[in-house]
Image (cartoon, rainbow, N blue to C red; front, side, top):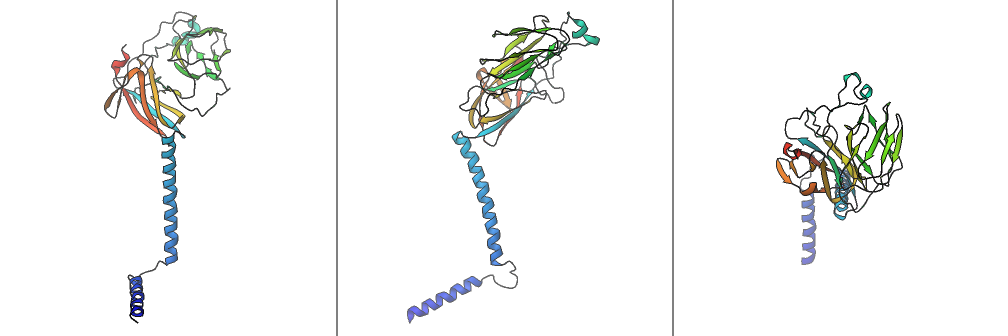
Length: 291
């Protein structure tokens, strides 16, 4: 009898506890609450799984992430000097046009630094196969349109001439030294990487100069007029970049978020996240270009 009494008391107590908070003010049905909780739980699980997948891909080196950033110049933008143009002036100086030295180009409004070369020194994996579609490297108005040009080993390059006069394109360190007739092009297919950018010149017009960097993978970029660059599908994980500029050679110092960072031979290690990595603004001091 004592046990029966205790059992009955326990049932009564549970009933009281179950009714705490009950009353007319309660409008949500228990079924609706369970349904809402299920939706919230599913959302949280999905978000957690996505975050976990990104972290796991980065940690194990199985993912791919975009890499971007921007280079800026710390001082006042320098003035570009006029080049001496003394041949084929009817084309090269038509209408009094002046050709300028493009060795150090800084955007006046944003101080973005153009033509900084950024490439991954080594990567364990490569996502994209070599394309058969030719890259176009053109020359017009007696100058190479791209002062700095990035290519990949094995991908054809259409060395083109859009001028009405002939040019000669000579790529240092290679056997490519070709006359390019007016309005035509010649295919150059690099068969080896360059450790650093190498010079292109025109033997007919000696003021014409540009640089080409050839890499064994697609993980190379040249900063645009505003200093920005982007490299797609980089293997997630730690990657060692190399930074180069015509007037500085391998860049030895950058300032990020107000903190100066010395980098030997232009090498800077960064972590590429599977969700993408933005290196932000990298400021370069004028002194590094005075070599």
